[in-house]
View 1 (spheres, rainbow, N blue to C red):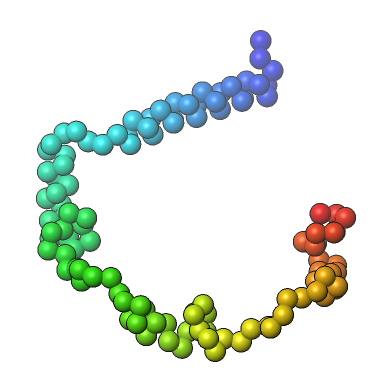
View 2: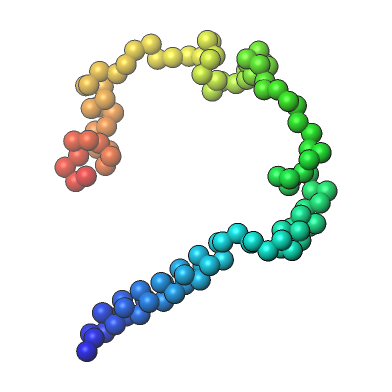
Length: 111
């Protein structure tokens, strides 16, 4: 009836479909009000809860000056005018010389 490999594949498909259906059944939100009230009770006083009404907020975004003050001295800051740059793009010959022998090179025959 079934060969051994096709039987194994069929069994794996059936098991994965059954497991997938069970996983999707758990993803549905609880419509039971007692479950929601239990969650609310458990999260009461938790400052990390999304429903925590007394969570302190600043009420404003940082200004450009505040952001730049925080990034001052950061060598990776893209707005750093003192960051060293190469000054020129490499030529094709320089790129080819740097990639010579690299398995990731575009012209590598074994890639």
